[in-house]
Amino acid sequence: MKSNKNKEDNEKLKVFIKKYISPKKNRLVFLVLMIFGGTFIKNINPYLYGKMLDSISSSNMEYLIKLIVIYFVVTIFTTLLGIYEDYLGQTLSFKVSKSVQKNMFDKIIRLKTKVYDKYDTGEFMYRLNGDSDEIVSFCINVITSFLHIIVNIAISLYFVFKISTQLTSVAVFYIPASFAVTFLSRKYFKELAKRRKEYNDKYYSFQNEIFSNNTGIKSYMLEDSMNEKFKNFISRDFKILKRSIFLNNTVDLLNNLITVISSLYVIYLSAILIRSNLLTIGTMVSFNTYINNLFSSISEVLKLNISKQNVIISLNRVNEIMSKSSEKRETPGNNFSLKNINFEGNEIYFRYSEKDKPVLNNFSFEISSFGFYGFVGKNGCGKSTIAKLLVKLYDVEYGELKLNGESYKDIPKEKLRRNITYVQKEDFFFDDTVLNNIKFGNPVARDEEVIEMCKKVDLDEYINTLPQKYETVIGEGASILSSGQKQKLSIARALLRNTKIYIFDEVTANLDGKSEKLIISVLKELSKNSVVIFISHKVSSIIESDEIFLIDEGIVAERGSHNYLIQNSKLYCELFKNIDLNIREKVT
Image 1: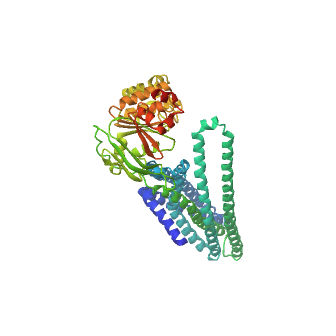
Image 2: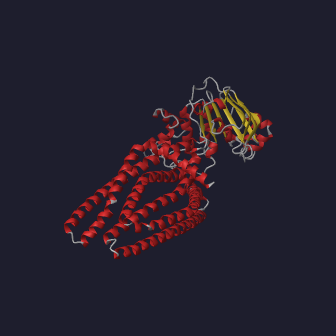
Image 3: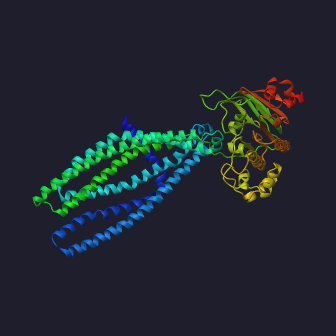
């Protein structure tokens, strides 16, 4: 069972190397050859050092000077070579790592929304940055170290056997003992790596949550509570750290014990051989250096094996993301007919996950002409869900959704989103200029068109009071704008797209009465030549609707104009009686 698991893990690493590292094989081969040359030349030094000691003992100064010059040249050359190797290695790692991150980033932002919702932000952040870097570093380290280790072992074995076969017997104890320590400890390292990564996911998610909601934390005076949570994270981190220290120290202790026993054995046996004139001090020093090189190379192999346990966890986490279903890139095809728009939903059934109860159940509706359509209902009735289905963020589980007679299943998402403008209730801004935050709705729009849309939503005057006007950077989350101004900017961006279908989800929630009235009049004018779907809890926002869909318990419970519903629907009256009683009385 374990053997099959190891084979599976090795196969995953091979696939990763083939996909991301093989394209850089020319640069990698050059780096490996440099390492090979540097390692080969560097291994001459211990032999030269031993000869220098023997030259000192025999007072052969002329030969000693030659050896010193050669030793100096070799040392300088290998040092410079090492610097260049390091440069090549780091730049190669960077390029491969960014290639992995680029693919992974593209995968994450294209994940199906249903899949995306299952992960915390911290999970994406750590897998994208931490896990990908660990895998790349390990793979390149294995490839570049492999030849280096093989050369070191080969040269060290050659010289230790050449110097003394009797002393070489120390390897009979060292090698199996070191392998035993690694074999017994690797499963503990793997478990620890898994715990560490799960902790990091939660830790980064917590940080993102806190820094994204700083105003709310201050408003509810939660600073002390958040500090306590942070302390709990530190406490958990410390427990993992202590476990890691204990495990590493235990392994190091056992390995050091094996090394010390081996070294003492070499010293004892060397003393016997020197006394018997079978070994010199210089050759003993050379042997000791080569045997330590041998031990060090074997230790590197064992450390790579331990590192592999950590990397396999990272690789599984990255593969988990990369294997998830994402939105396929499709050919948008031709635009829809601009003469009219017809939405039709037949007995739609939808839930966010298999564990959840259905949000929409037997939901049917029809919009057959341009106009202003209101979607209202209690919280959680499915209003925003409909909006997300209409822009194909989610797929209908059962039933059918059609646009102009064509099933949603057959319409490419690019075609839909090119023709539908969806303004979500959550703020959506980049840390960029006012102009760019509006123009990404329509990158080819002229600046004059942007200004015109801002004038329509009564935002132009405020923008002109900013230091750089439309070129002012609005900060992360549009921090320089009020909540109402953010909604106006979002609406201006939507208007700039000039599509035939608009979906607005609670976009007047933060506007004052005057601004709301202005926006509704703009959207009413827009609806003469387009379909405007307006989701709101405010009766003042939907009172002008050509038709209102009252949603309850996942179905369209009632439909009609405001006047019709206020007179004929008890459910509609109940929805607004405590909010806009004066409007109800006026209408009735």
